[in-house]
Every structure is written in C-alpha cells, then in structure tokens.
Length: 148
Image (cartoon, rainbow, N blue to C red; front, side, top):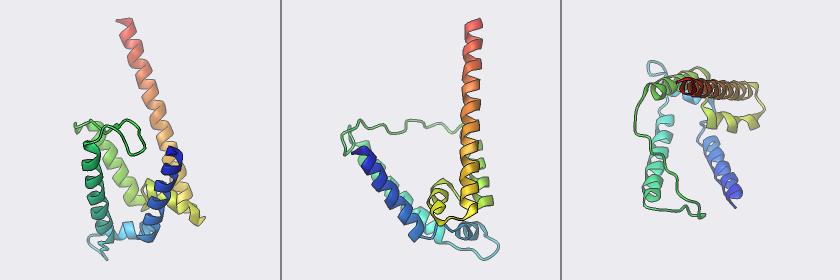
C-alpha cells in the first residue's frame, strides 16, 4: 500500500509541477532575474508549497503514526551548520545555472529533451560522489578511533 501511495503522491506532485509551469527552466531563470524581466510566478508556487507544508507538518507533529500506520519520523535537526550552508549554496547555484531543481528535472524527463536528462545524470553523479566521500570519511574516522 505504501508503494502505491508513494506513486500516487509522486504523480500528483509531478502533475502539479507541470501544470504550474515549474518544469520550464525559463520560469526559474525569470524568477531569479531580478534586474531583467522578472517573473514572480515561482514565488507564488513556493508560497503555496510552504503553506501546504506548514499545515502538513503541524498535523503530523501531533501524531504517533502516519495515516498508513507507520511510525512517524519527523526531522529533529535544528542546527544550521557549515554543511547545510554550503549544500544550500551548491543547490542554489545549480538551480540558478540550469533552471532545474530535482523534482522538476525528474518530471521534465518525460519531455524527451536532453537538458533534463543531462541535469538528472549530473545530479545523480553528484549524489554518488557525495555518498562515496561520506563513506570514505566514516571509514577514516573509524580507523582513527581504532588506533587510539
């Protein structure tokens, strides 16, 4: 049941991105072009998403189990650290340069255009490199602790 719900939610999200025009990189670039022909529509989509997210998290915070019966696992991190800041900067730079973020890029794969395919391949490669570096760091930390 959870896989079916994930599929339904993903389809609704993807359709929402397409209907709102957020799979069009020129919309993103237009939003970020404050000195040129600024397009505020992405800001309105973001505001709507934030509102829905706030309501959903407020509802979820008071629950012990999800609607499907799973144990609720809400984020607990509250620290703004160097990794978060640099990750946000890297995400924003990639978003501004390509005009895609992960959700719209994946939804845009259905268009058959090369740009979302290249973006998604680069994104997955970056994720794989990050995972590899994290594993190597963890292994080196473990080795350092073992030597002590």
